[in-house]
Image 1 (cartoon, one colour):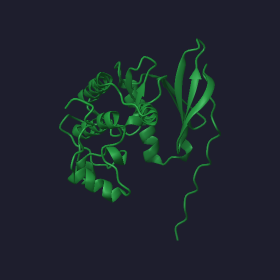
Image 2 (cartoon, rainbow, N blue to C red):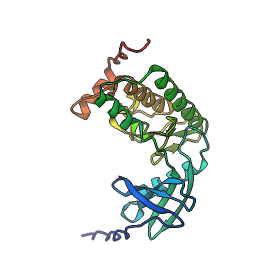
Image 3 (cartoon, rainbow, N blue to C red):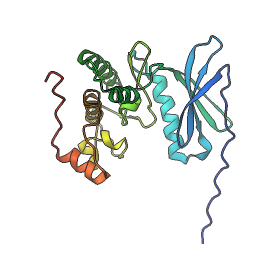
Length: 246
């Protein structure tokens, strides 16, 4: 009878170092947390602290991939990477802070207030996201998890695409990925049908976000994953609210 290999004990909680001072925790996930920090010049950043000791080899590879992808991207509408380092089996990734929150939060606030976004604002955000997405695809990078929670806003209401933890760099623009990944509400039909997918799946997800900005809800919703998949693959496609031009 085979014996299980003992897992590594979790690493000690890591606090920001290397000249960064913690201001507050701003997010928590299965394998780490996001911390708002400032440097010696009082400039604000987000530090993602990832506990590598709790991950399997694939998850560690995904975390390292995020660093590799982020460090290669330079675009005005993509969250900027500053640096990364490891300490006590923790990986720290330092990125620019988008001080306007994320699109999902903004949508929820508008919904609670009974308001809608101005059409020109939605158009500008969508244009910024599209330019960023074209840049990614030109570099053969699939984001694979575009959603309103991963579109960040600055204090000036400029959009930044972020969170590249499950991005995939393809060998060429005609290559296809095969791993089912992403957030269910934004999954493309080809992913739902377990078919190979490519850049069009990111475009589909961005279209879902465009609808969400206009309607203040996701275009496809259901009480179960099976029902959601049926709606995504068989339609009908919901119409935009009549308050916007067609």
